[in-house]
Image (cartoon, rainbow, N blue to C red; front, top):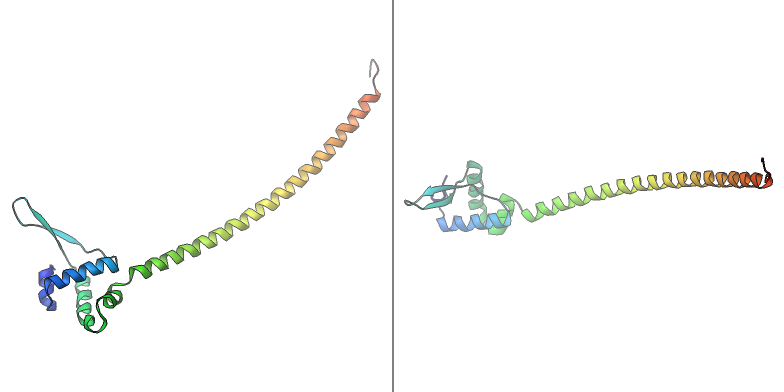
Length: 147
């Protein structure tokens, strides 16, 4: 449905609907479909093409706008983009917090494992050092020609 037909059905002017459309796009971050029509030999113009759901929303707006005002009506009918983005950000924050906790637990487990591995390597190194010293002691005593 084009904007002139919608304006006639709602009893509003075309400029009013254009203003509403601009506010809806700004506040609700909603994008309307546009079709191109040829207005001259080499000129085309983009005009909004409203589907049945959008027409129903405009009808609801026409009913509610007198009592609630333009912004509140847009928030009620089309939704509030700022609240939706806030909810999206909070969801991302929760997801990242859970991922961080999981990563921290995994890192702590790996640190504990590496500490145990380091301790076992230290004890192995100490025993090898003692054996090497004992070997050197035995070799110092045998300084003869044929050992």
